[in-house]
Length: 243
Ligand SMILES: Nc1ncnc2c1ncn2[C@@H]1O[C@H](COP(=O)(O)OP(=O)(O)OP(=O)(O)O)[C@@H](O)[C@H]1O
Ligand SMILES: [Mg+2]
Image (cartoon, rainbow, N blue to C red; front, side):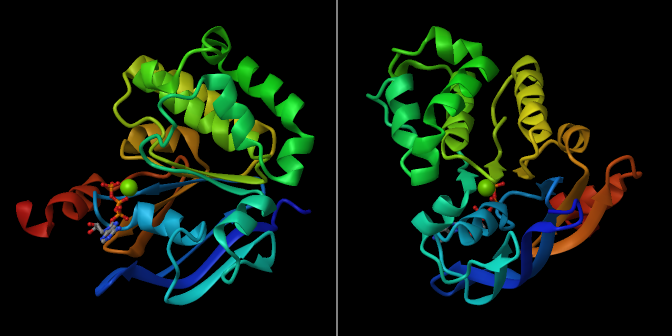
């Protein structure tokens, strides 16, 4: 696959809950070797977008293509089996399960079972803290360890692309740096990333490109190294009348 091939392509996506429309014509893409960020205020549809891509909720209108193929009509498990892996916001771990049990359980697709040993070695090297605590129950882990385990669960699914929803939420600057290094390492293996984060400096340090989401639409795209219009960001967060 050439570096220009799109891993993920979203065209005019509309989705929401009951009578509320959250995504109102969202279009974006992630290249096959790209790290792309999603940034926007609380409640503007970042998680809804990832949930729609991974088919936790159904799109109303629009197209989702993964590795050049339409995946709109696939069930969530089939999307996982294709390797499009969503690490959800807030960790959804089973509290009484141990780290090792959690990692092994995550590798349930055919491809993931075949790669179980090498993926397990990889995550335990990537996060030595999990290796040291391998028999510890999830409910006893710190916030940072839980985030490491959540990302590792995604890696155990044999990803061809990862979508991470606020993996550093609530973490100290030191732990954020540790996770940033791990995310960069994962991406250096050629796994494209779609990364949701609330800290604009942090996200820009990690991605090649970033989309600003505003009320369920893409307001703007910012390339790494480009100047950020902080007024625009303030307006998005507080409304243009605050100035
Ligand atoms: N299951 C649900 N049922 C009804 N409304 C929902 C549901 N999940 C989310 N919403 C609503 O959809 C809108 C978008 O929520 P979403 O979680 O996508 O935002 P977000 O950008 O991820 O926010 P945050 O930065 O706080 O995580 C919000 O108004 C939210 O209340
Ligand atoms: Mg969210």
